[in-house]
Image 1 (cartoon, rainbow, N blue to C red):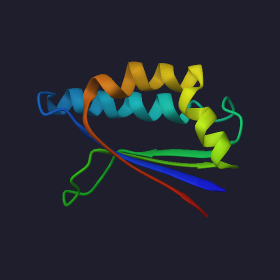
Image 2 (cartoon, rainbow, N blue to C red):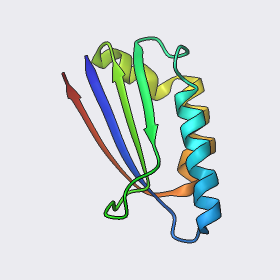
Image 3 (cartoon, one colour):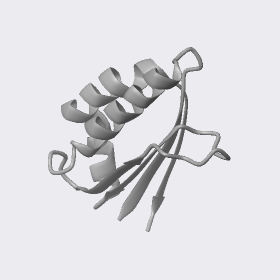
Length: 100
């Protein structure tokens, strides 16, 4: 099994209301990939960090293999969510992939 964890920080110019809408869109889009990507076993998006957090959104996903993770990265459904709901609104992305 392979874990794929990402932390995003949203762009500063977004208002508080816009940030809430963006977070909801990221969550719906990414969690909506469950069952659509071969080898993706779990996907969860967390958007309600505590005030001590320095990131706005966390993706926690699990894949059967590293090859499945690589397939996810280029899968058209994932690319559509990333290009439409994530990348336009984020200024910083940190990623950690590891075997479990």
